[in-house]
Image (cartoon, rainbow, N blue to C red):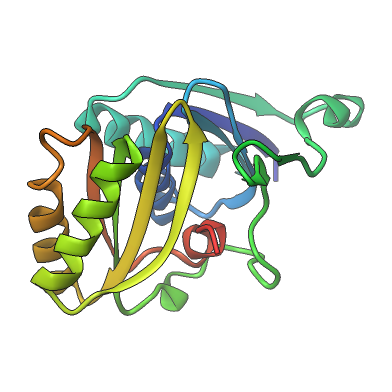
Length: 206
């Protein structure tokens, strides 16, 4: 069976996670790596049978279009092994952002297994401006029974905070938190991912 590499580059970190969730649920593909770029977005690298990679990237493009974010995709059938040194980035830590900019799925995440999806939802609120996101998350926590999981910085003042809970609670929290951003900063994105895939969860900042 022909194997392929797929690449999908998306503007915005939180939107990247939504797109990744959609493409993983669409086909039998494996996430290899996510690499943050200097455009406050990320490049996701996947592999699988050629047909599955094409189907996954189509689902990713469709989700990006719904989110109205820029997206570039490409498929390389039967990649040349000598090409690996170009796409397979080494671990890299950005001291300014205090986090890794090359991310790989957590241990044990081998193949997409729909039965292993989480039984909860995650919510992401991304702003330009730290004050805005701190106010938003405090409001989100007061609005519903959710847990704050992590935060991700992208430089340029962009920051995402991730919350967890049941779908209804996360939707209510994200809605309430997003409404508090105006006047304090710029709301970049606000999303809810019901039952995120294991690979998505493994990439969330700790």
